[in-house]
Length: 119
Image (cartoon, rainbow, N blue to C red; front, side, top):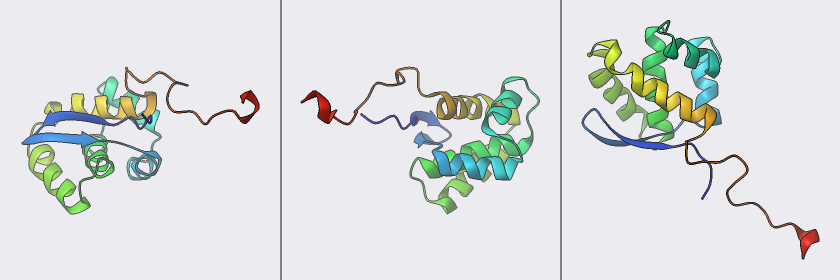
């Protein structure tokens, strides 16, 4: 199993896979003008900006395999039209797993390349 820090949860109108890989994290930091840990800090201390919530969710839907236009539609419907506090826990959890790994993912464990010297 690879360490890809994806999260599949019930959100909005269905079950979705969320994933912020390297490219999505770079886009997130550009769109929010802050690094991932700063955005996570803001989400965790209730000093978030509106874009922190919507960008984390939108980009992680894209990273999870949703087409960008569908991700935008979902965010417009279930984030922009809802009270912000409904989605803060989702954004915080998604970004936390992206930067720290899922609780069941132990660093250094996973499929490692065989060591040719040990053969």
